[in-house]
Amino acid sequence: MYGNRVSKSGKRVSEAKMTSVALSEAKGWYAALMNAEFKGRGDREKAVRGRLADKTGIPESYLYRLQYKTREMRDIAGSAYRALMLAHMAYEEVCLRNEEAAAKHRTERHALRKAHATADKRSGESVGMGEASK
Image 1 (cartoon, rainbow, N blue to C red):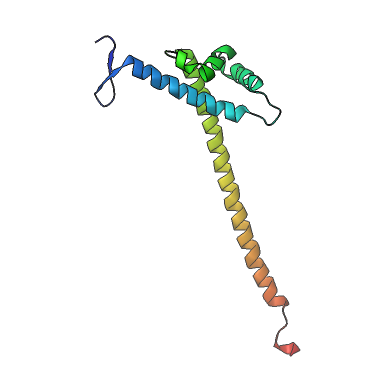
Image 2 (tube, helix red, strand yellow):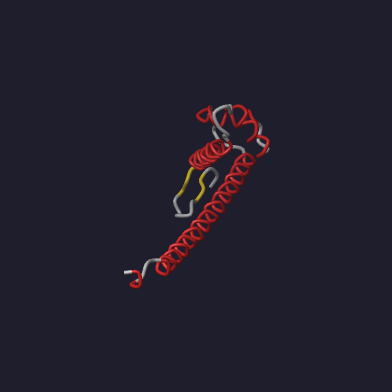
Protein backbone atom coordinates (compact mmCIF):
# COMPACT_ATOMS: atom_id res chain seq x y z
CA MET A 1 0.00 0.00 0.00
CA TYR A 2 3.04 2.22 -0.31
CA GLY A 3 2.25 5.43 -2.23
CA ASN A 4 -1.50 5.01 -1.94
CA ARG A 5 -3.35 6.59 0.92
CA VAL A 6 -7.03 6.36 1.65
CA SER A 7 -8.89 9.64 1.96
CA LYS A 8 -11.80 10.36 4.29
CA SER A 9 -14.25 9.40 1.55
CA GLY A 10 -12.54 6.02 1.12
CA LYS A 11 -11.05 6.78 -2.29
CA ARG A 12 -7.42 6.14 -3.00
CA VAL A 13 -5.39 9.34 -3.18
CA SER A 14 -1.90 9.60 -4.53
CA GLU A 15 0.77 11.17 -2.39
CA ALA A 16 1.48 13.67 -5.17
CA LYS A 17 -2.07 15.01 -4.95
CA MET A 18 -1.83 15.30 -1.18
CA THR A 19 1.43 17.25 -1.35
CA SER A 20 0.07 19.56 -4.05
CA VAL A 21 -2.94 20.30 -1.85
CA ALA A 22 -0.66 20.99 1.11
CA LEU A 23 1.53 23.18 -1.07
CA SER A 24 -1.42 25.21 -2.38
CA GLU A 25 -2.85 25.56 1.15
CA ALA A 26 0.49 26.81 2.45
CA LYS A 27 0.80 29.23 -0.45
CA GLY A 28 -2.69 30.60 0.28
CA TRP A 29 -1.91 31.03 3.96
CA TYR A 30 1.35 32.74 3.09
CA ALA A 31 -0.41 35.15 0.71
CA ALA A 32 -2.98 36.05 3.38
CA LEU A 33 -0.26 36.60 5.97
CA MET A 34 1.73 38.76 3.55
CA ASN A 35 -1.35 40.91 2.91
CA ALA A 36 -1.97 41.24 6.64
CA GLU A 37 1.66 42.13 7.36
CA PHE A 38 1.85 44.78 4.62
CA LYS A 39 1.97 48.24 6.23
CA GLY A 40 1.37 50.60 3.34
CA ARG A 41 2.85 52.42 0.42
CA GLY A 42 6.47 52.62 1.54
CA ASP A 43 6.62 49.02 2.70
CA ARG A 44 8.64 46.72 0.47
CA GLU A 45 7.92 43.09 -0.23
CA LYS A 46 11.33 41.96 1.01
CA ALA A 47 10.80 43.76 4.32
CA VAL A 48 7.36 42.22 4.72
CA ARG A 49 8.73 38.77 3.93
CA GLY A 50 11.54 39.34 6.45
CA ARG A 51 9.10 40.27 9.22
CA LEU A 52 6.97 37.25 8.38
CA ALA A 53 10.06 35.03 8.42
CA ASP A 54 10.94 36.34 11.88
CA LYS A 55 7.41 35.73 13.17
CA THR A 56 7.02 32.22 11.77
CA GLY A 57 10.59 30.98 12.03
CA ILE A 58 10.63 29.98 8.36
CA PRO A 59 13.71 31.16 6.43
CA GLU A 60 13.04 34.10 4.14
CA SER A 61 14.51 32.21 1.19
CA TYR A 62 11.96 29.42 1.69
CA LEU A 63 9.11 31.95 1.76
CA TYR A 64 10.48 33.46 -1.46
CA ARG A 65 10.47 30.03 -3.07
CA LEU A 66 6.93 29.43 -1.86
CA GLN A 67 5.79 32.67 -3.44
CA TYR A 68 7.65 32.65 -6.76
CA LYS A 69 8.90 29.14 -7.42
CA THR A 70 6.01 26.93 -6.32
CA ARG A 71 5.99 25.10 -9.64
CA GLU A 72 9.53 23.89 -8.98
CA MET A 73 8.61 22.63 -5.51
CA ARG A 74 7.38 19.06 -5.24
CA ASP A 75 6.23 19.35 -1.65
CA ILE A 76 6.44 21.56 1.42
CA ALA A 77 8.39 20.90 4.59
CA GLY A 78 6.16 19.83 7.45
CA SER A 79 7.64 22.42 9.78
CA ALA A 80 6.95 25.23 7.28
CA TYR A 81 3.42 23.94 6.66
CA ARG A 82 2.71 23.80 10.38
CA ALA A 83 4.22 27.23 11.08
CA LEU A 84 2.18 28.85 8.30
CA MET A 85 -0.98 27.06 9.43
CA LEU A 86 -0.53 28.17 13.05
CA ALA A 87 0.29 31.76 12.05
CA HIS A 88 -2.74 31.88 9.78
CA MET A 89 -4.98 30.44 12.49
CA ALA A 90 -3.73 33.07 14.94
CA TYR A 91 -4.38 35.79 12.37
CA GLU A 92 -7.91 34.47 11.75
CA GLU A 93 -8.54 34.45 15.51
CA VAL A 94 -7.45 38.10 15.80
CA CYS A 95 -9.72 39.02 12.89
CA LEU A 96 -12.64 37.19 14.47
CA ARG A 97 -12.13 38.94 17.82
CA ASN A 98 -11.89 42.28 16.02
CA GLU A 99 -15.15 41.63 14.13
CA GLU A 100 -16.91 40.58 17.36
CA ALA A 101 -15.71 43.75 19.11
CA ALA A 102 -16.90 45.86 16.18
CA ALA A 103 -20.31 44.18 16.25
CA LYS A 104 -20.57 44.79 20.00
CA HIS A 105 -19.59 48.44 19.54
CA ARG A 106 -22.12 48.81 16.71
CA THR A 107 -24.89 47.34 18.89
CA GLU A 108 -24.03 49.68 21.76
CA ARG A 109 -23.93 52.67 19.41
CA HIS A 110 -27.37 51.86 17.97
CA ALA A 111 -28.79 51.40 21.47
CA LEU A 112 -27.42 54.81 22.49
CA ARG A 113 -28.84 56.46 19.38
CA LYS A 114 -32.23 54.93 20.11
CA ALA A 115 -32.07 56.11 23.73
CA HIS A 116 -31.11 59.63 22.62
CA ALA A 117 -33.91 59.71 20.04
CA THR A 118 -36.55 58.77 22.64
CA ALA A 119 -35.10 61.30 25.10
CA ASP A 120 -35.24 64.01 22.43
CA LYS A 121 -38.88 63.16 21.68
CA ARG A 122 -39.79 63.40 25.37
CA SER A 123 -38.00 66.71 25.87
CA GLY A 124 -39.54 68.10 22.67
CA GLU A 125 -43.07 67.40 23.94
CA SER A 126 -42.61 69.29 27.19
CA VAL A 127 -40.74 72.26 25.73
CA GLY A 128 -43.13 72.93 22.84
CA MET A 129 -45.86 75.53 22.98
CA GLY A 130 -49.15 74.28 24.33
CA GLU A 131 -52.74 75.57 23.96
CA ALA A 132 -52.22 78.22 26.65
CA SER A 133 -50.19 80.38 24.29
CA LYS A 134 -52.86 80.42 21.55
